[in-house]
Image (tube, rainbow, N blue to C red; front, side):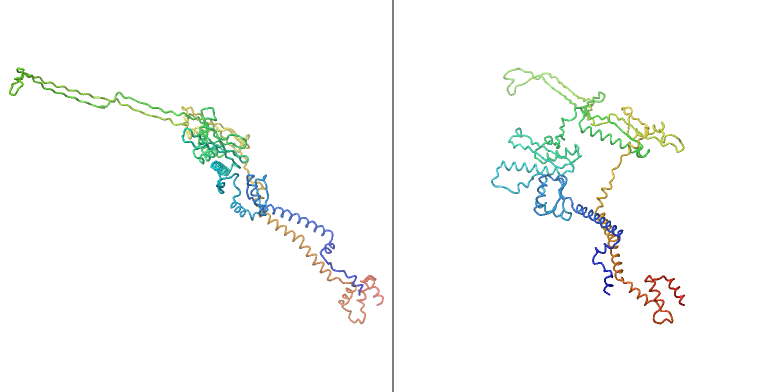
Length: 525
């Protein structure tokens, strides 16, 4: 009985013994699934660590970056520095809270010191120190404001503020210099540069925009004076106006051709010669046939006179004296003066600046598709009737005047589609991958869990159950024989030892074959 117990196989004690009892094929499958699961979970954990970091600040000035890093170290917060120290990343769940706390602490300052310089005042500060600090604060505030522009990564402003004088003739003008550190690949337009110039000039009392100079980090001057630039008669403003006129006329003609020939079937280019001369004319015209009375003066005079006679002397002069009167004469005079004014017209004419002198128009149209049954090239040139119709249509749309010197040429040529079609930048697969990476991460986690369950855990559990069932029913040969003897029915009429059981025992023990046993029985009857 003890020997039978020793021969009985013992159930495995742990998982390692179960794995050792597996066949080689199952062991290799288990090893492959385990390595695949480790690699998959390692990639997911590494990517999840990077994806949990979000941008805290970017394009920081070195002083601001140092202040932010120092604050994070004092508060024992994790962070990561990228982009050559200009960008700081930290865990996504703390980004907004840290930004609010840094803002409350006055960090970052924006690449310079501003009016917060006056938050802490000293009673012993001199007037000169106050003026210097005020100038520093102005420079810092202007630099911060300019740095907020999208194309500017950093800026520095230098101000020259002269002392105020009693007399205006002795007062010197203020000036300013601005240094811009532009973003990679960005170039400011003239309007943007003028915007910076007027921003600085409007921030300083009494500053003229012409006294503001803007340069970039490479030392290239971005501002131009009115007396600088082109040596010819045209200024940059005139060139811009000319380009606007040409572009507006091209759009008008191109819209008409696109409706007639289809988009991409034609091209229009216009050169406009404009008259920028300013003419002022004053003209006086006299009309001798037309006159008007300006003034009229009439003068009339009448006089009556009589001759006095008598003896001269005292007696004649005394009262009662008699005077003698002789004969008299009467006279009258009439004078009339009429002033006439000749009709006069005074006209003052100021010519418009930027008038069109003449236009030169070039129209390129594509050839027509060839008939389907025709052999040869796929396109055929347009006939003269079509070209004349296009010429008249464009000339009417643009208001061309041949007497003014306008010209128009219409040419039919095949288009090179490969040169016209500009490839559109599309979002690459890598950009889409990072855009949907959070969802992809969870999907990969679910896939990895499913693979781990179906390829590792589930087969392992099934094998353990099968091994447990096999171990539970392990029995010796004697126990199986006795069970088989108990289950085998006895022959009818047999007493004691049943020959059927005896034959089964001999066959199972391998002493004889069933045929030999039956032959022996037949011989013995």
